Image 1 (cartoon, one colour):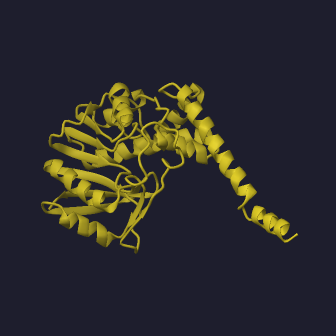
Image 2 (tube, one colour):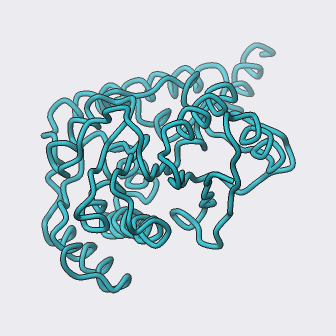
Image 3 (tube, rainbow, N blue to C red):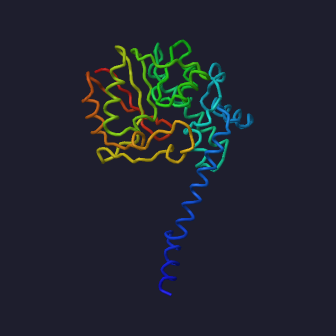
Length: 282
């Protein structure tokens, strides 16, 4: 009787048989997701009616026309910036598309207002082009370079958005959207120093951070990538997590970089949540 009650109690609180069944169910769902991923074409076959409606809403809300309207609407099957919100919103296609397109276009408008004459632009950690697809409209006469740890993302931006592979030469403008919000402390510092070293005289680095916290630096080993293990080129949780830091840590990291730099925090928010931080030579 005692063993029966113990087992019943364990099942009720999620350990024991229920736990084992849930773990098995989770693995089966992950397997199905992987099989589904293999069957998808590179460009997601999203119904054109939904894409066009969300696209038109973005153009109208932001007051955009040509050449913005001519930008590619292709979305890669493994783009976590689209796939994770799609999962969170429970399949509300229009809501996810609208958020996705609006975030990308609004970011380029912000970057354009800060450095309208940039000749060479690096989209650092640009992924599958949530922002990159609009750079051709915001900077039609500029060389637009793409850098990302995912080879499939770089290839997609080159093929569909006319980007060029990063040539490691100096650039006038670097946009690092939602990059430093994911890097472990050592990588945060080294990447910041490397990017600042890439800037031409008078150039600017525009990056985004989560709202500053009281804790100096906190790294959580999970992101949207953790919930989408079936996607190709998924990054390791040891190298790509969720990062929150204090402003004192940010200043300390900037001061530790080679050169003399100043920064400005804009009132606008990337994606409605992250800080825009603009760094220029002091």
